[in-house]
Image (cartoon, rainbow, N blue to C red; front, side):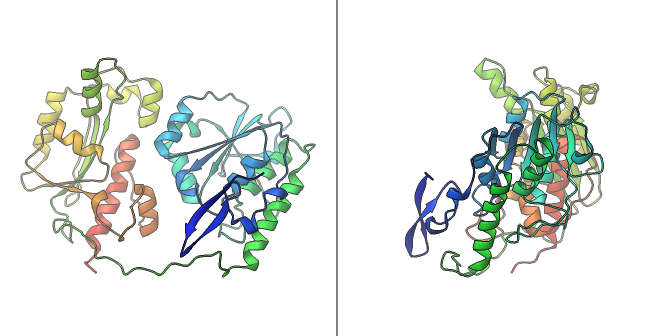
Length: 393
């Protein structure tokens, strides 16, 4: 029986099924079949998708006995990947020119394990970008014969399918003898049809929009980026057993990137790490051992960083660890702007930087520095430029 819970909505209380996440009077768990699938299915779900009322990964996990659903923020999902080992028989269901068409694979080439990414198209691209191990998996794709039937949510392209539709289509290719896929698709159709038949029912709570709050953009960002330096730093993992060394590892940078927005001058340095960086951790940083072949000492880095900065510079960053890093290197003379603290909407947290940029429809520029640090710097720069172009409401 479905796990029933109660949640508060509007003025009253109503029961909700936390298996299918639909109101109790629209629960369709009894329609979801139990499928003894042979292929192991691992679903990695973006955290923002977790509580969506029409999330199909939740239905898949309930139906497929040989499956597991991982839900976490980006760093948690990346850590889960670090702790797993994947064989050549693993396939990542992900569209792209380099992906192999499942229908064209021989029986020997068919994956025995299937990795599926769940979220909006932007979310899945972010997962693929920020978890390097994903790019090492063999990619497989589908050639849908018909558009998605997921009429509740809009797909970015007619050939794109919901997570449930794509996974079922893949499993039909991998194990056509398995029973239950038709019933699962029927349950999915029932959910979609039920919602489309009652788009404005009492179950769809509509909250009044609050008036937009003024953006608390610092004056140093408003239409003047001449002396704004956006930065990002990576740290070594705190893996040593002694408390002092662990603390030191977590507070000193090992890779540092920055750009002065007024002139485009860039600063990029690898710093000698306090411990040997493992291959898996380098993969997490999207860097190689060779990137540290010319790493400088911490004292040299402090000197070079100080020479790059000008007295009138303002330092801007989105990630909170940069505050600790700036303190660790002794930078106390420059004005600082913590971009994440800028209130864009009253009563609403900004979320991850990728989610924020997506909500603001901000187009990213190219990453001019290496690794994950370069990508995060590019995202931070895009946000700073967007905020600079905004005027107070």
